Image 1 (cartoon, rainbow over the protein chains, first blue to last red):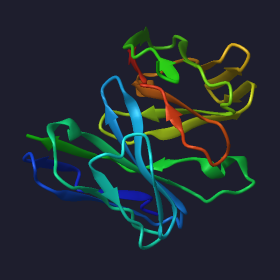
Image 2: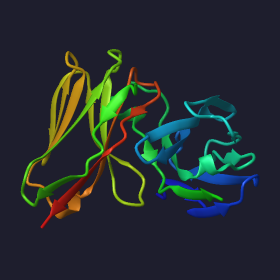
Image 3: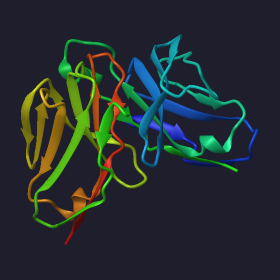
Image 4: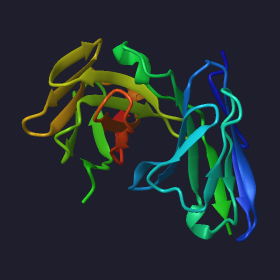
Length: 117
Length: 111
């Protein structure tokens, strides 16, 4: 299994440009999420989805949009890139809510490094 | 004040030593506690998972949770250079809640 696949791995944007970070998982996970990782800040939740057609905001949603039209895909859109959005972005997924205690474990992608000039 | 505090390190130890990592937290509602390991330029991967208080052992790794002190620990015995990574603690209130991560501690194990 490929697990969680993120593309692109690296991207450089100019201020004001828009782009989409792609995320796909092949584990039939209901829950998908996007995090950003900055030095000294840890992982911060941007947006998440508990199933196709359902999305919600996380801790730092401003400047980002998401949609979930299929179980497999969860793209993250930057509407008008700003230097403050320079970061490493991680997509993560987990199985839906279940009685098994391990069911809520996140599987992360390899990350997408974004630089906004 | 952050909900989860973690010393960023770096923590440098010689091969074979015990690595001791910890996190403190402020939200007493947290019940699920995890440790993730992240190698350079890779995504985090789950290392240990604990529900509520107590200890859990898996090979060279031991996770401890002290809910009365709001303090969790990870111990790595007989450390190896391959253990060099950043270790992130994470926790949540319920099985479906959002994870709150610590900032991560960088560990360097020298041969």
